[in-house]
Image (cartoon, rainbow over all chains, first blue to last red; front, side, top):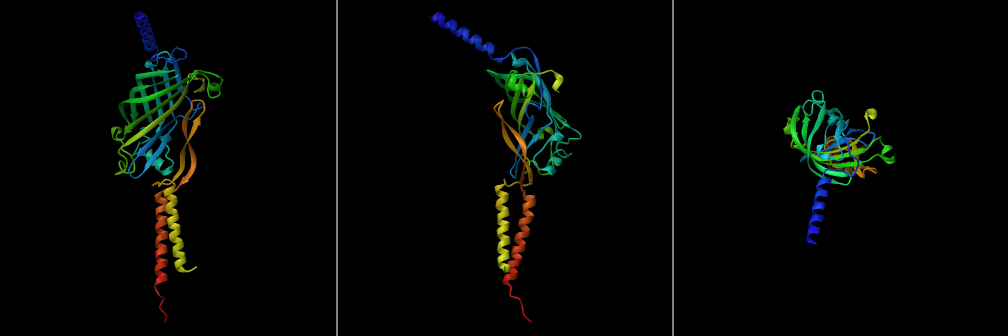
Amino acid sequence: MKRYLIIIALILTSTAGMSRAQLTVGSGQKVATINDKINKNQFVWLSKAPLENIQGTSEAVKGKIVLDPADLSKMTGWMTTDVASMQSGNGPRDEHLAGPQWLDAKKYPKIKFEIAAITNLKVDGNAATGYANGTFIMHGVSKSMIVPFSLRYLPENPKTRERAPGDLVMFSADFNISLKDFNVAGTDGMVGSKVGETINIKAQLFANTAPAANE
Amino acid sequence: MSKKGIAYSLFALAAGLLIWWAAAGAHVFTMTEKLVPIKDPLFGTMVDHWEQSFSPGLEMIGPAILVLVIAGGWLMRKARVPTSSV
C-alpha cells in the first residue's frame, strides 16, 4: 500500500512539473502581433502627487511576442508606444508632457520594453502569471526591469474570429517607474508636488497569432 | 434687488462653483475627458476608454470665485456706507 502511495505521489509530482510552463492549448512557436482590432491596446498611467492625481493613457502600441504555448518560459518579444499619443484629459497638459522638459517626444518618440526572459511562471489552464525580465527604454535611458505580468490565451474559435484571425492573447502588467531613473526632470518644482516621483503603469495588450496579413 | 441682495447672490454663486469644483474631483487643471472602464466580454477584463466629460479645474474656477467674492464684498461695502447728501 505504502509503495502504491509513493508511486502515485511520484506520478503527480512529475505531471505537475511538466505542466508548470505549459498552457492547455496547442504547442508550437507562434508570433503574436499586438492588434487594435481585438481591443484597445494602451498603457494606463497614474501619477500620485500631493496636489493632484493625474491619470492618462499612452496609445499607438505596437509589438510582437514570440511564444510557444507548450513552453511559455521561453517567451520573448517587444512592445512600443508613441510618446506623442499620451493623453491625460487636458490638452495643454498633454502638450507639456510631450514637450522637451518632460518626455521630449521629438527627441525620444517611442517608449519600448524588450522581454529577454520569463521567470516565476505559473500556469493555470489557459492563463499564466510570471515576471518578464527585460529592458525598459524611455527618454533615451535603458534600464533593466522585472515586470509582473499575466496572460490569457484564447485558441481560435468563431467568437475570437469576430475580432481577429488566429489565437488571441491578452497580456496585462502592473509596474512602477521612477521619473528620476529615466532623467525626466520636468518643470522646476513640479515633480513631487503636482507630478508623482513614481508613475504607476498598467498595460493591457491584445495580440493575435495570425500571419502578417492583419498588420 | 438691493445691493445687499445682489452681494448675497454673488457669494452663493461663488459657493456653488466651489462645491461643483470639489464634487467634480477638485482638479487643478480643467479636464475635458475622463477614463471610463468598459468590460470586454471575450476576455472578461475591464478596459479603460476616454469619454467626453467636463470637470472644471482650479485654474478656471479659482479666478471666477475670486471675482465673485470681490464683487460681492464691494457691493456689501457700498450697501453699508451711507451716501452723503449735499
